[in-house]
Image (tube, rainbow, N blue to C red; front, side):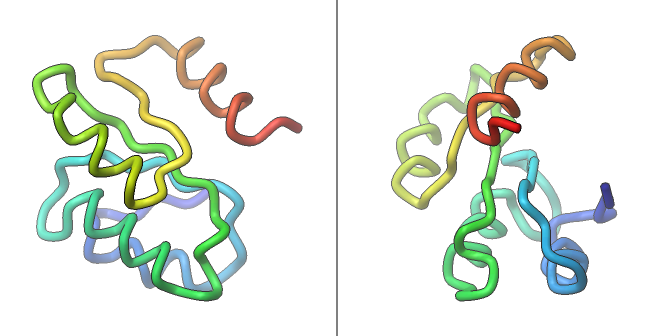
Length: 94
């Protein structure tokens, strides 16, 4: 497991080893989670990577856009650890 300090650093982190799952916040600076999702989906090496977007109820209107862009699941903040485990299991059954 690795963590990028921000959205702009995430593509470099993702380019090193192969990752099976990205969990990203929609609102990051300087690159948003939506921009990161589009970048991952446009990269032929990363496009199959599972992607979970954390989103707030106030920004639920973005749910449709991130679904169209290819997100595998959305996790509404605030959430409990059990919600994260359930979402991970739904998109990436072990």
